[in-house]
Length: 255
View 1 (cartoon, one colour):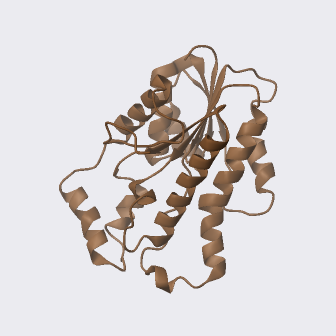
View 2 (tube, rainbow, N blue to C red; view 1 turned 90 degrees about the vertical axis):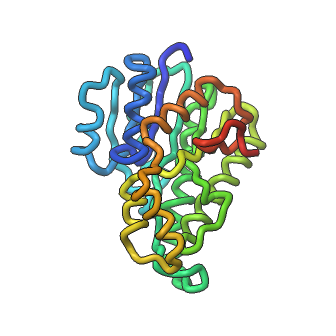
View 3 (tube, rainbow, N blue to C red; view 1 turned 135 degrees about the vertical axis):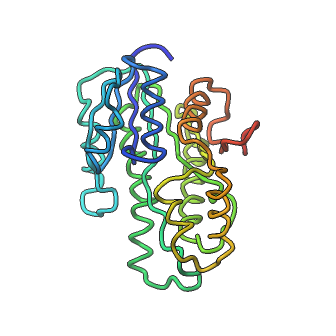
């Protein structure tokens, strides 16, 4: 990819988000401008120490309902008046949800609404604001997806439902516009703060927690940087069909 490139990465201060930043810097260096959406500025500073890419930081509360469109717009105000040859959105923010209850036990509408506002509504708003800020520039939207988007896991009903909705939303985005390149990327099972909780906290279905424990005990986790590198290479090579879901382990896209 030639020219000046803009990358917007949410959930950027830790886990897979920080790996995305490192791999963008390794692959593009001074060619890249990164807007890192991260609540933990000190952790972000540790990640980007020594980067040759330019990094701009902003803290965004994606779970707050009031003025969510304006908060998303503030991200892109950081690069107002600047010109880019291509722009990329890596939509990585989200929350795993309560795994101590089964689907039949979620009956608090406020709790459910709050979960999906953070994990789906703000995701949609950010995508829309991103695309409308760069109408005449080649743009790529990447949803950090999961196997949970296409397979049910007991104890993870909120998470699976949110991931499935994000996947279908981006499939619709791809179907509606040939001008937007869309990738749903499932990075594989990684050891992050979220998965650390999954094998230590109570789950309503013990077999699901045991699966996470087995991954840790067997050290079967996917390396976050290796997965981020594959994702960025997939986008760079541009051989996938827009809207596809691609898993870290896949040789062929999942349509």
